[in-house]
Image (cartoon, rainbow, N blue to C red):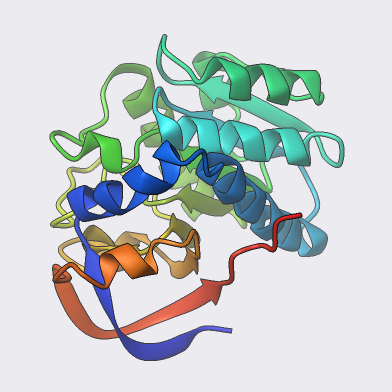
Length: 236
């Protein structure tokens, strides 16, 4: 259940700086993020069973989505579209090994309404310099956006909807509006600025242990934000 509370929203740079010492210490933040993402997708699929489409870009966002795909593939049909020649190879191999299947952009664009859940992992905070979608990424989003809006497909954005600027919320027409945005570590400022509120859907914030570092940083936005908090998983 969502709750409204006063909290901060942070820039991409602030979040990356907060992540850095944890990553340097070997914290498996990507696997934690992917596990939370997969759990939320399973909750949706329990009510709306069907096929899952994973849109995977070149960066960590794509890695999050692909590791989540690996958790979902033993349970439901999972199809993957790679929107870049570069990909997180370990995550892709894990997903394919679990039973997910690769699909071409053209195949997905020809039948955009066939999925119960879409995981949008094309771009994340690493694209803050220029989040506009191009090439295959733009083609698949422009095909899926109207189809998902006209159907009961649940779009889950991985950290933020691809094409949305993580800091100021600007975006051009090529954005896949989300039903749920699963954002990691902290609310990104772009989710609550500009076009953000119109395209993010419900915001779920996954705790990755960034709060101590972010407490020393001035938020880009402070206000009453309506979010669902997802506690950090206990590691054994």
